[in-house]
Length: 307
Ligand code: 3PG
View 1 (cartoon, rainbow, N blue to C red):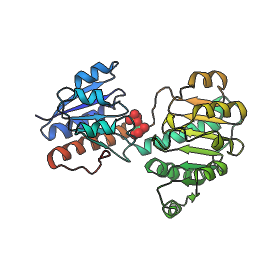
View 2: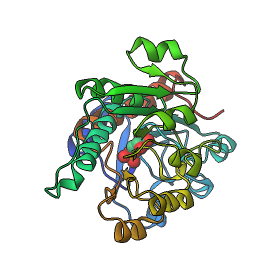
View 3: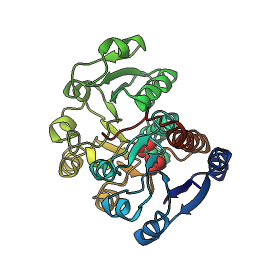
View 4: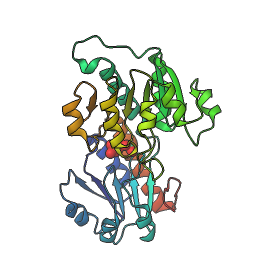
C-alpha cells in the first residue's frame, strides 16, 4: 500500500490533518504522522518506508533522501522550497512540488498585523501614525505580493511594486504603480514588504545601500526569509538611523542583539507564523495531498519544482 507521511515540525491545524487524511485514505493510501519532532533521527526513522512526504519548512536533505528508500515525491505544503535540496532529490529520482498560492492570504494578512503594530509603536500607548496615504513598496509581485496589494488598498495606501519577472502592465492592471528596480522601490517607499524567495540571487540582497536609501520613517517588513536580508547591513542601519524599524516573521541571526538594543524599533514573531492559520493549513495541506494522489495515480507533475 502507498504510504504518505506528514512530517511537520510545526504542525498543521487538526482540521487540516483530518482533510489530508480524507484525501489520502480516500485514494486507498495509508497516512502516517510525525509532528513536533525534536531530533533529525525521528525524521530519518519515519521516512524509511514511505512513498510520499508532505512537509512545511522541514529540511529534506541528502541524508533524509538516503534514508527514504521508497520515496517518490515530496510536496512542500507552501510556497518556498529552499528547505529542500532539489539537486539531491533529482539525483535520488524524487519529484519535489510546492503548492503555490495556497497560504498566501494568511501571510499577507500578517504583514498588516505587523505593520499596524509597528506604526502604533508596538502598542506602547504613545501616539503612532496611520497607514493611509503611506507609500508601500511590495517586493516581489507573486501570490503573497498580490494579496498584500489587495489588502493595502483597503488601508488607502499608495502602492508600488517591483518584480523582476512580472510585466509592469500586470502590476499596473491591479492599480499598483510598477517601478523599474529594487533600488527605485526602496528609495521611493517609506514602507517595504519583502516577498522574494531565498535563492542564490536574492540571499543578502537587501543590503545597506537599499536600506539607507529609504525615506525618513522607514519600515521593512519581512515575512519572506531571513536570508534575503544582509544582517551586517541591518545591524548598521539600526545604528545609523533612529527612524528605522524592522518587523519580521523570521528571527534574524542577530535577533537577541536587536531585541536588547532596539526594543522600540525591532520586532519578530518568536516562530514563523505567517502561514499558521487553519485556512492556510487546510488549503496547502489538502492541495499537497491531492497533488500526491494525482502524481501517484496519474503521473501529474504540474507543480514540480526540480528538474
Ligand atoms: C511558505 O513558504 O509557504 C511560508 O513561508 C510558510 O512556511 P511554513 O509552512 O513553515 O509556515
